Length: 239
Image (cartoon, rainbow, N blue to C red; front, side):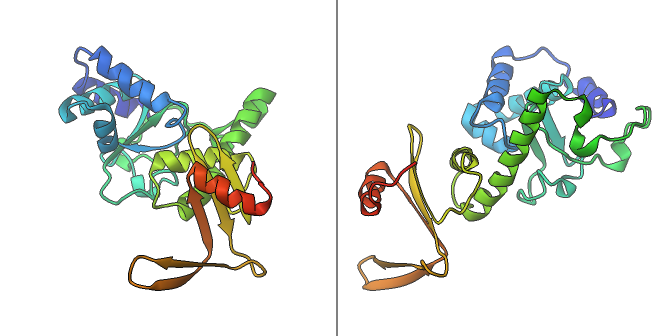
C-alpha cells in the first residue's frame, strides 16, 4: 500500500481506535492457521462477531497504520493479482496478515507519483541482502504457496481452514497427490489415494437406491477411526 492510499484512508478513518476490535482482527489474521491466506471481510465479520460498520472502520485504520494488509477494488486491480484474482468476482475488499506477502497492482489513478522510482527486486525480495535464515523463510513460503495451489485445486470443496491444514501436512512431503498417504494429528486425520495406471480407484456407493460404481481420480477419507481401520489393510502404514 503506497503513501497516497494510506493518506486517503488516514483522512477518512482517523477516529479513536476500538482497541479490543483492532486487537482481535490483528490477532486473528496473524494466527498460524490464518497468516498464509487472503481473507474476504465478510469472513472476518462472521468469525469475530464485529458489527459490519465497525469492522470496516477498523480494517481501514489498521491498513493505513501498516498493521494489516488490505486491497480494495477502489484502489487496486484485484483480478490482476495472482494472490487475489482467483477469488469470487464479487469480492471488493480483502485483508491479510502483514506476515503474508501479497502482490496486487494499484489502479492508475492511485499510483503514488511522488514515490521514488526503484528497480523492483525479483519476486519482491533482494535476495543478495537476505540472511541465510531469511532465505530459508522465503523458500518455505514459496513451497507453501505452491502446495497450497495444488490443495485448493484438489480439495476446493473444503473450508479454507481445512485446506490450510492439509497444505501444512503436504509441505512435509512436498507433494499434493501421493499415491497413498495417511496422516493423523490433533487437528486432522485423513488417508488419501491417487489413481495411477496400475492402481485405479473404484468405489461402490449405495444410498438406499441400489449400488452405484464410481471410478475416481482421487479419494480422501477423513476420520481417525476410519484411518486406523483402512490403514490396517496396508500393514498399518501411516505417517
